[in-house]
Length: 88
Image: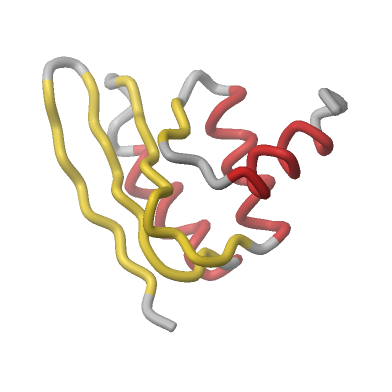
């Protein structure tokens, strides 16, 4: 399955639109892109993500804990993040 990242900026923030299956191989790529945006608010739009592995979910949780915003987060991913962080 194809995985794609598209970037868009507006105001002081940057949005990464993710699509496809997000696995451990894609985590490093996304983290490198986000590191280059350390001076901006980062949004991750997950509307087109079809599968998230455990390692990818942990990365998403770290993004959120660092102040990033998950947009259009699938319910199963939200539940998994909340459970991992002890919120459920």
